[in-house]
Image (tube, rainbow, N blue to C red; front, side, top):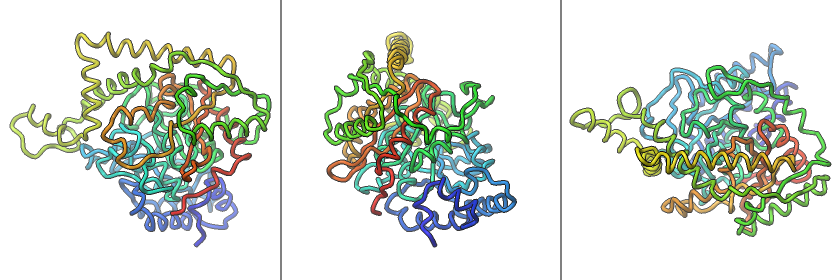
Amino acid sequence: MANFYEMTAAELARILRAKEATSVEITQSVLERIEAIEGKVRSYVTLDPESAVDMAKEADKILGAGKGRPLTGIPIAVKDNMCVTGKRTTCGSRILGNFKPPYDATVVRLLKDEGMVILGSANMDEFAMGSSTETSYWGTTRNPWNTELIPGGSSGGSAAAVAAGEAIVSLGSDTGGSIRLPAAFCSVSGIKPTYGAVSRYGLVAYASSLDQIGPMAKDAQDVALMLNLICGHDPRDSTSVPREHPDFTDFLDRPVKGMTLGLPTEFFSKLENEDVAGAIADARRVFEALGVKFVELSLPHLDYGIAAYYIIAPSEASSNLARYDGVKYGHRAEEYSGMIDMYCKTRAEGFGPEVKRRIMLGTYALSSGYYDAYYLKAAKVRTLITRDFRKAFESCDAILCPTAPSPPFRIGEKIDDPIQMYLTDVFTIPVNMAGLPGMAVPGGFSKDGLPVGIQLIAPHFQEAVLIQLSAAFQRATDHHLKRPPL
């Protein structure tokens, strides 16, 4: 059987339309790849091969009748925090270990309507709280480029699955960098769309004003195909913005000559890693050769981004996670005396250390007498950061910066030092705070052969600009063509 798992969704779509292979054959190729390497990588929480093959058979019927759509028959992994009817959805947590949603998330319904093949739920940091996929109750996902290293988080399973050939494309969610960090660490392409561009209905909430679903894929073309599918207004999501989105594939071949990229001085003053600095310098040379101009700019309130984020996100988490009490669904303690004791023991057993830490942080920030000093002040800082970006985009089409301050680090290296772990998000968090679209693409490799990602940031609802720039960069480089030596 051909190694279909190594191909992109666009390549496989052409093969399916030409009837050179069936969706069942492609799905079997990916399932065999999963069987061969999943023990090393651990991308998935739940796999459903039988259901995947059934979906592939249905896709072949649709294709045979000439009714196929651009992604019909393509196998996909879905992050474990998006509801799939009747399938275990745990958010990487013990407290939801037996939860099977009675409905589909809007994005999942769109995948099914397209005729895509859902392979299973991808591993993640518990309730998306983490930068390394080490806080999952179900174990750590490993980086396909070096299984001693983290894949990034919180969508580590989604990124590792695409990089390792365990899925053709995947869906992740991004609250403070959770799509872009793992994309950079696993050398795949991933985009966090504008807040409100993709429905959050059926996404289990971490921080409702920051969470956003987005695709991860081998290249910009597949990202564009996925954006075409999932972007759009959803009346069931009150934060979904009613607006038309362009056909993102129209921007894949557009020249970038004459465009301007901004370089924020505050980002680059924090850049100490030679490998990351080298990748950004190389990317600049590539863009300049394509006719892109560069301008230095300032985002003066950027330094307050992480501090404000770790007030806002835990505060919203504290509120959102109050629903997990052992009464209605999910894990419940077996031994308790009275209702209050049942609540306490259930939550103590059900949540891991990082989730408890953030619930306590958020509860404190929202408590009487502290709300104004913490949450309200953080919200004001958020407004200032948004204004900084708005002013910056007056002088450029997009911003170029690192995705992460270093290449992927070793499993266990930062898990006991929350501050160091939080600083991993220093380049990604401001994008969420301002609700902007940001895209990570492979930017090369460190001297040790580890992936380094670059990040592009655009104004609100300008995902097309990110696709245009990323596609041009990938035509001029081959970083995205390299595959891990598993």
